[in-house]
Length: 337
Image (cartoon, rainbow, N blue to C red; front, side, top):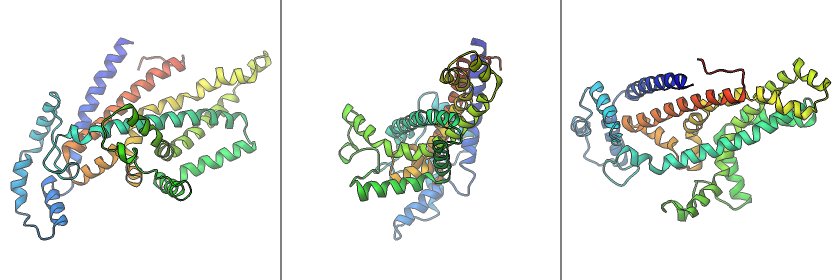
């Protein structure tokens, strides 16, 4: 067990290093850099400004972008060891003026993103597993057909479109504004129990929007896997020996059928974070999605690189946790790979 964990940690560190290199390079592949993007944005905001393209070289020296790419990469990685993740190249977007540390740009958005993703995962699994079990044991029933129809509809409808529909219904018929994650009086307030309660009260709409397609997919996976297990001889043998049907289903087939769901833990959380960009924009959610989108557009390499690196780390940790959970759920699996 210890040897396996050490081996996986070593591979994880190597993977994170490779991800950091790829993220740092790919973000800078488009034409131009953060200096030219900043000048374009400032000239676009003020048509009569004195900014000229010739100012790019001076701005590039100010931002430290005149150094070779490999030098800037090793400076970035080296500073991470001291807790310095670099500074954002996008002043005036998240603060009123000046460059600020990347850690401050992410700030509370990281915790709201984790809270939203965690709540969405809980809702998804809580709904998908029992519904998938019911759909399998009641195959070809009216309930199974209804669940199948809703499941395919959930996979087909885009998340952002569902968000727009829920916003309209809530505003037109319930007289509620479901945009954002906080009430107006808690947006700029420091964290407290009252603010946490307000967050939980606003989480249900984005959780439904983000979790609909995932729930529908997991229901189909759970149903199909459980149907395969229910048709195997050991289920018939247990029935012949007098074991009750539901005891057989819960104790044996469900434990095997749930394995693929546990395997999705590795990419479920990063997918929720990176895949919620459009939904976050539509619902005005203060998450990392819009920050990542704007950072990539502005070629804000330190900000975008850190977020991509965090997503990679989440994937690696999730994959390791899913492998360990599978050992406890399914005794046939051994930690020898």
